[in-house]
Length: 79
Ligand code: FES
Image 1 (cartoon, rainbow, N blue to C red):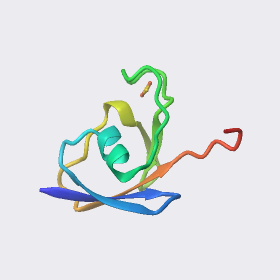
Image 2 (cartoon, helix red, strand yellow):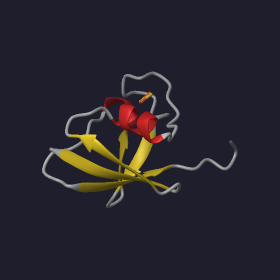
Image 3 (tube, rainbow, N blue to C red):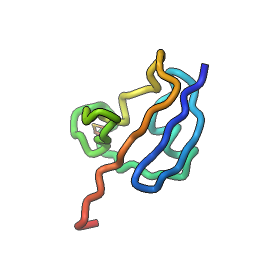
Image 4 (cartoon, rainbow, N blue to C red):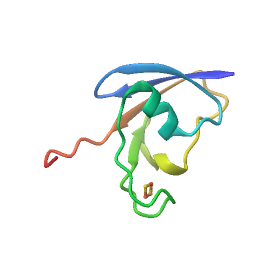
């Protein structure tokens, strides 16, 4: 089972295995997600998934039951 992940705003598409950590998928795609605590508490790694929900990439894996997912990185203009 794999999921097609599209990262915005760069529009990079990669295939990921269900349950694969989101940070690994992003690294494989060459997309960098900022991280801090890696424990789900600081929200530095927060990304927005299709539909407007946000989640912490460091504690999230690829969902099952979906064949494609779009993930938007928050672009911080001060960086
Ligand atoms: S790195 Fe802190 S919540 Fe993910």
